[in-house]
Length: 124
Image (cartoon, rainbow, N blue to C red; front, side):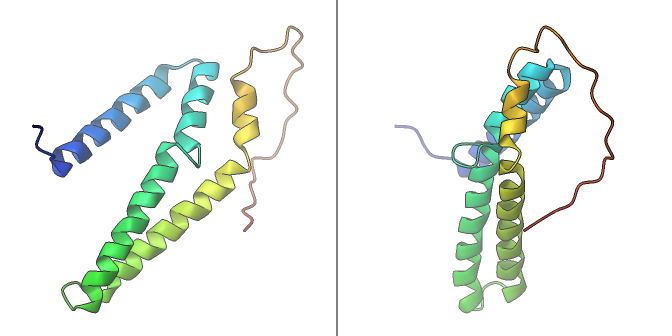
């Protein structure tokens, strides 16, 4: 029987994310786009899973804050973090098709990219 060790699992996940980052650093544009597409997938990606984990942590902290075991600020901070991660995921989901397009083979005739201002406006 395997003993469940959540602390070891969290360390393993952090290590795997670090390894994934190393792959991303040296990846081709198509490989990098595939990695990012999977990481940022709101349903099955790392970002969505992390958002869910933080939201679950917020509910845990809420129960402890209501009984006085934790300060309410802990619950509120985790709730804000979950909300921010959710908003970030929504913002990035708007650009999923752009990232997916990078996974495709480049066209045979390539036009030089048009210059554009690197100003992004956030919307909610």
